[in-house]
View 1 (spheres, one colour):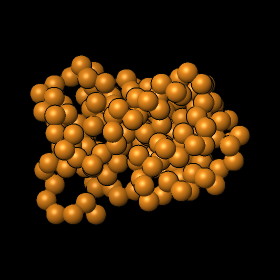
View 2: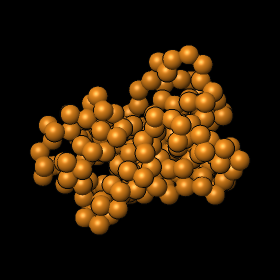
View 3: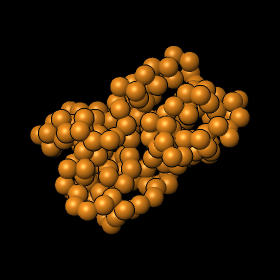
View 4: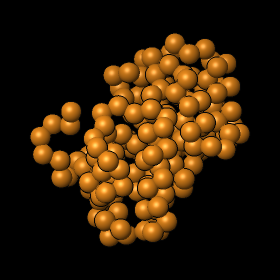
Amino acid sequence: MEEFVAENLQRYADTQGVLPERLDEFGAAYREQGYLTRSQLYDVAYESSTRSAYHVEKNPEDRCREVTSNVLDVEGDFSKIQLLTGLSGFKAPTASCVLAAVDPERHAVVDTRVWASLERKGYLDGRKESFDSADYVAMIRPIREIAAESGYSAAEVGYALFAHDDHVREGTLH
């Protein structure tokens, strides 16, 4: 798997995926502050899905700080992602950006392409077009297995899986 991840990480720059450098910036601010502001959450959401980022502005500022602060104190993956998806504009794929930003060793950005690559590799069954918190947990387990096996972070494995699907998929995404 090390070769698979390395090869596809090189391809990632040619995709239209979330920019790892931007997530690193958000993660640094998140760790330093202990929370993210609504403006910062909007920026994360915009990186992930420009079409739906405006929904983030419906969240009260204090709720954004409270939820993102609480995410740092919660242990379970399901609980972390569930907290974030309670915010307007944050479905599991966008919420995964926040988790990957704050802890790239344990979390990855996930979406349809990542699921499809995991399915092709035999880690998951069936195709998916939308995701909830339980689906995030289903994806992060094999991502962490691949990370442990390959020596890459969970975030890097997620980027590689995204790039792999972008490279091999025939036809449209949906």
